[in-house]
Image (cartoon, rainbow, N blue to C red; front, side):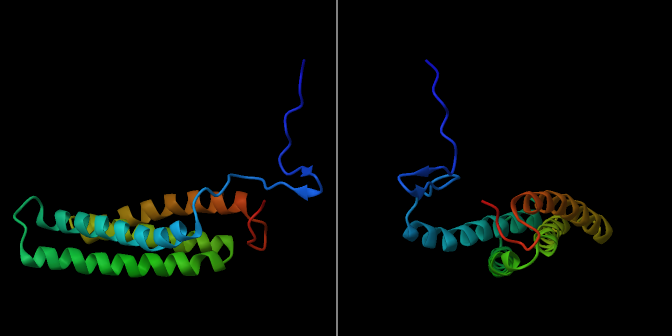
Length: 150
């Protein structure tokens, strides 16, 4: 005997069911993650930049200082982009994330003693790919005014 598959968003007992994935985490978990994610990403980025800069040599105090300053700068920029970008139209939203990603990658690449031109071109290439991916994502998940669909 065949049964009809449940349709998303259909009414059950006079109330509309929610479509999409359920939110399984509490509000407290989301608040903790909003602080933990930038800090963890910043620490990984700072360590990566410091490791690139020392090129397998010994760890010095200046190298540690460089890593922590890079971490702080990354966290500040990441939090700023994350707070500012969602209030923009999808084109600018994608441009802001692409500029952040391309700049971050270009900086990491420059720490490997590559030329400024090569580091800039690599950052532009990564930023262009990021722009294409982000624009496609926002274009398919938002309406023309920038409101999320669904």
